[in-house]
Length: 303
Image 1 (cartoon, rainbow, N blue to C red):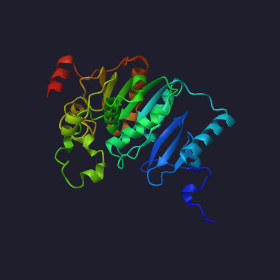
Image 2: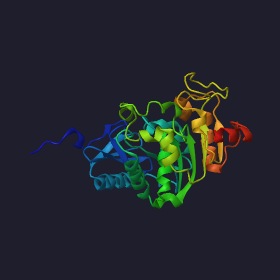
Image 3: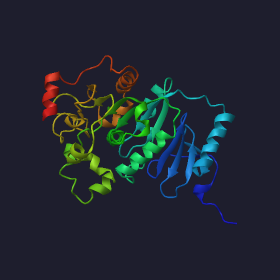
Image 4: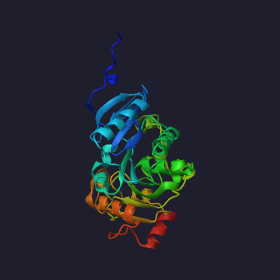
């Protein structure tokens, strides 16, 4: 009798949630079905990232429905918030923020192998992921890094789920690319470091090939509003990784500068979380600090 490989063993086992070789295919009430990009086998993860079943997609889906019935898992809300991570991140990046939305929205975190998938492959996987939840009435998004660019590209294709999109918040998204990377983008190692979607980091590619956001959205950035920013090696105000000028988007309904926040801490910052929740729910940030006067914002956009 042929022995099963370790990846075929069907018993509960703790996982990291799928950081490099897994793509999310389905999400329900915090449970996720993921597919391995190498073996094409699927696994079912519970909300605590414990593997509960493995096999083909239909096998994992049937196992999920069994858990839903046996454990009497409540039906999630008809409105959802979809979290899209950036490079070298996973669904865990939004763990704290997601808890603040859980009372009013279903939480859906879309994980994808950010270095292995190209733009077209990621959009196809996102479309498949969202189309499988035809019961959801409204889709809101919170994106960071290249996650915001992926959302812009996906919506440009007018997918089936586009009509359900409510509001979105971009947290530290390089809406104009990353200006500091222009001089490195032609280096041989650039695609290896940043993966097959490295074009989304290059300002020239973004300006020519990435469509504008077609739905209501807002922008949150880090920085210090002192003209220098966190990192002295980046020109102008910045959060340590992203320049404020590169994060600005003139089509956004509103934007805020998270004063003194660095890039790596934005998603766990209480003020940023509350601003994000306020915009998704009410369409405005509520109380907060505008980044610039309208005249200065116009000048920045024109540069």
